[in-house]
Image (tube, rainbow, N blue to C red; front, side):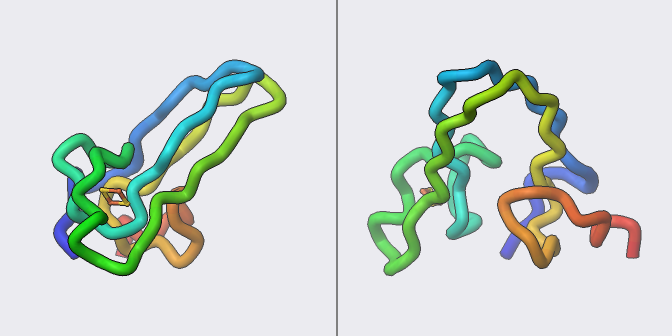
Length: 75
Ligand code: FES
């Protein structure tokens, strides 16, 4: 997969927000899904948040706990 950027995206979400995170790595609007996955068998990770949060979303696509950053961009 190609990286969107070298480090994580910082994303603020509010309780009630629904986000669809790209899991195929092909989105042009990463880290969010843009529908490009339709050419694959991969589906986005859709999350409904129940609290306000600041997220660290993987931008390098090396994380082992996608769609979230696990620090893998450091090495
Ligand atoms: S575009 Fe990648 S999961 Fe939707």
